[in-house]
Length: 511
Image (tube, rainbow, N blue to C red; front, top):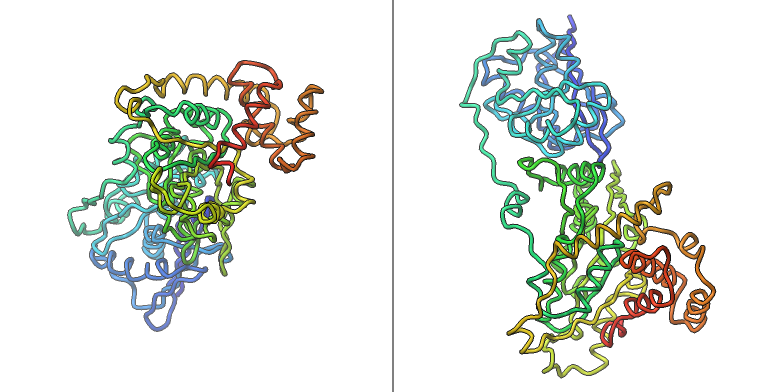
């Protein structure tokens, strides 16, 4: 006699979720437990976790052939989040009073050998997909309950042990273990406790501070060149403090990415502040772009979505890493292809780079020849730099300024101007698919320019000072400067200022 049990789970490939029907069949044959439907290695090991968890609860697997199918079979499945659904489907092959309820419920949890339910990554996009597909009732571990309840319309049931889940379906199992799951504090929660840096901490550097404000107002990419200790890293780390909060849609997307990456703490709800990622220059291409065996995981560019990706000591990054940034800088997303799966993650980030003018970094005591300095900065390729809107020469702070300070504005004051400029852009682009000047196409930006502005820009292109891509980026900067000034469209002064920001100072010009 053949018996069949069913349950539901959710599979993720990138941010795209799929409702997976878990079918368990018990049929005559030699005792075995097989999982089919494109499982990865961690999911293939679920048979041992399910077997041990059921045995710990006093429920032995039948001495027959057990086959578990994950449908649709053509979609790759990965992770331990299917464990609970597999266990419920296997038990449902017998007499389960609540079998119909189990089939309508989505189960997302990893099983411990003693039957405890452990949290898994990516619960937020999984629950969102389940609700969107018409399956609002979801069972998760208590460690994932706070994250799962962030999804509107979700009927979340939190459990700490397999016996609790089976008890809700009318099956009484023994409860092994204490049901308490010990969790480490996520990195995001530790960062929240530290607090946000403020622009008033930066001494001097009025030009760099203004460039940072323009970058924040229009979402422009930026590079700072200067000696060590001039304040490049301090400025970059304070960019998030002058950016506005994320919109609801962006907050859900950013939170989903960090949930998959395992860097999200649900204690404070959805991520509302723009993220900040600062990978070390020894990071591999997979760490920056994303990767891993099986279904690829999001990298730094995706974790920085709607926020800032900061590359300190940018010339020290391997050329292969820097070249991988070119495609996401243009498209705002990254697609990771593997032999059995491909995953697409959003990657609309603001790139900020910092570089010393020479390899020794000795500042005023530098003895590097001019050729060595040029070769060092030439590690940043022309195509990459052509995608950077703002180039700033950050000079060393004088002794008197370091001792006395200059009373620079705090982040809250600058953030008000940035928010006002972004509000103007949102109104201008209300009916268009972009919302920031940095994303506006050149054809749109060139419409309505005055004749004198057009003449200046034509001379720059004709002389070779600007490429066509560079022209579009100067136009974007000009519109941002006009928005900060509260003017409807850029004039000659804004274009001149944009050209200065584009070309930078002496060291930045060498790029």
